[in-house]
Image 1 (cartoon, rainbow, N blue to C red):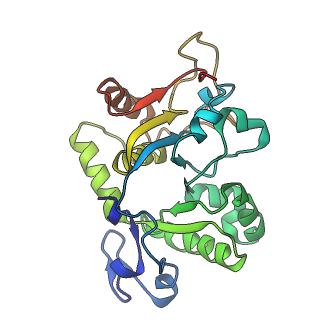
Image 2: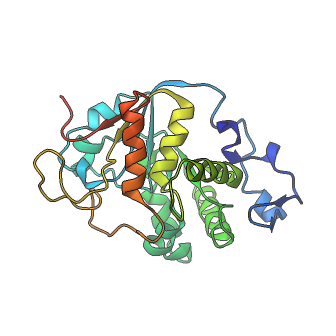
Image 3: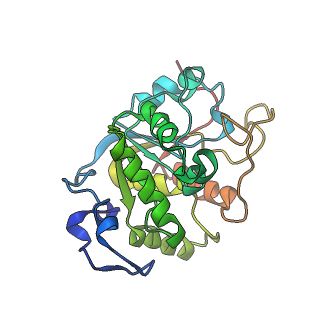
Length: 260
């Protein structure tokens, strides 16, 4: 299934229509599609870490354990500064970027192209997944990001979500009773990891404002306290599904401090 995760030159013809968006693939848009071998080969990794951004990661000392996985997935360009390395690690094979981050933090890349590209250095040559075709308003903003990466010769590898993949995920989880306007990025990455990896470990997935061990207060993210967009996402309901998968032995959720 993950072979359909992103659009490439060999699965999207110039002049065709991306049905979910009704956006014609003009030459300028076609040129942003990757033109090499599939970035996610039809293989499985033995171990994968999926790093959510929950406040529970702060002071968790999980960095080494996260980085010990063969494949590490991170969400929404979360910071990996030295102050966080002990707790969240630094290894990254795949990272996501939401358009809202490009809009708010980098002014829609109007005059902040270099700061955007410089912010990607911490991810080295990881894949950067963008929702280029998920919604019409995302398309040209993500296209700007891709051109900025190329213009500044960044080693990071931008790829675009196949909207049909996202639609299939949404359809499946709706059929399972998960009612929300939009699946969260972290939840989508867990689904991807279950396809890519034999063993999946989750860190930073705890959507509550208190710690499960001693009930002390937690910030929304390990790096800030920005409120969750409850209008779109149902984080507690998603966590309930993840907890069921944990109890079934399909994945492992790590809460609290990691063993050193």
